[in-house]
Image (cartoon, rainbow over all chains, first blue to last red; front, side, top):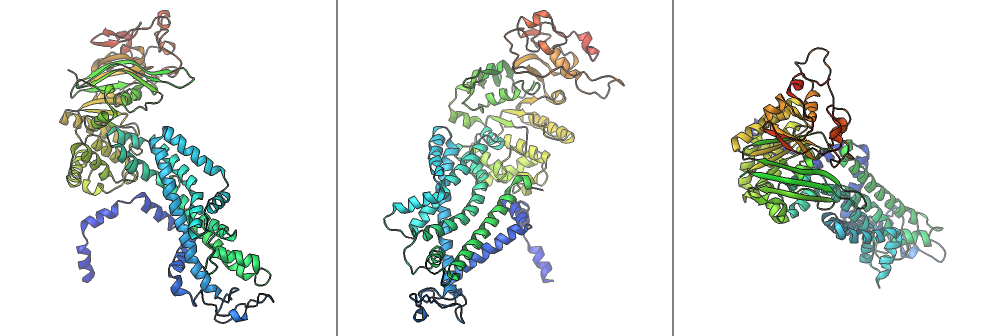
Length: 309
Length: 331
């Protein structure tokens, strides 16, 4: 009885809005059927949850030196896994599991911020080049060529080295610079494609204003590849950030739990004593990067019009 | 005064380091209010370029447009870009060939209509939505209020073309240019779209330029027909005259190459030999001469001029005589 009433109440305009299925909704529907997408999505979702709720999940305080007394670097002793410390402790006697969890937060922050900044700057450059064409396009694209001609890690290192004091922000900025030329080039390409497309010609033939042509007709149709690339860049951004930390260009604060620093210290100083200290952050980085890559790849596939059934 | 006067319209494709190519060569015609004028020819004859030049939609780079296009006395080719943008969609509308690619895939149909209404008729979003439902209804789209929120890929081909026509007619332009509007559609849908166009043109008094390679479309819709070949008008006539007595061998060939139900058994289709070639210019004789069954030696030496002929215009040294045309084929 109750359900019947509820059904009746369902407004008709709600039904109407369901019928309009955008390309995005269509892509989502296709992704839900792909095992690769689901794997990538699950890893990513787990990582996001862990990162966001890390301070609540972490069994111990990641900064507290619980077992400092049992560490003796001179004799090469770092306590291994034991009750209460399932992954052991680091050289300060801090709980490694808790540090890894909190590190996820750092990794997510650096990866997301670096990607977002990269997308924003890249979209502005590529959008200007694609919308105006002509000499604007030529000048901006030569700039992008210069950025692309430098190997990505080298670019990040040089940007990071520009700053007097390395910090988390220098890492974020340095890593974001890697994405900028890629996003700019990508958006510019698809914007130029849109410029000569039939529907832009049709909109022009209707006297639609140029700003609407760019923002309503060209840009939304060009963003697909950029979104996909952003997902993939998130994976590389995490790797690059870890690489910068590994090379000592990251945040110098040894207290901060960050996978790159943990890997760096583990691999350089304690590989012969406790190789796990290097393995755990390395595995974490690889799994997360893999998750984002799988998600990005399947997103690309789902948005590809050639794969439409 | 005619609604649209096209005089000596010439479009050259200019490429650096290459000889320029004249795609449209001195085309002149008039469109009266409410009249339907056809531009007919094979692909590559310059009919689409003519329409794009009238709408000023050709890229400035690489295209040289000269001549005159007067709309209600205003020279369109001399307007500023801004003034031309204000006129497009409001005074002159256009319907394109492929309805799917001519609609923005990421925006619902409704928004693509209201966008134009807001732009040219200064309507509020709300008033424009009401008007959009009305427009979709008018072009025969069932359940129009539901369609407003749908995306182009959810409509069928015929629906999409109807929606495009609704968008083009949203601001009641006085001239509509339809560039092969039925080419991408099924035959049954073609007939529906043509009937719709005819109805709308008659109801609103909109003048129509119909660009097509399909003489069947011409037969059903156009008052006056211009046949283009190699960028020039080779024959102009009223529809009935053109079909009853094609004078230019090219027109005759086009008509003879259409399969007909009432043709005798075993009667062969007569195609036009060869294809349109870029390299045959008009400066040395007639561009159609190499493919023409009626070609005389003079055709390869003297360029024929457009001259009055049987109530129309004709550009030919050796036109088809009516008796031969009635036979259905020349051979």
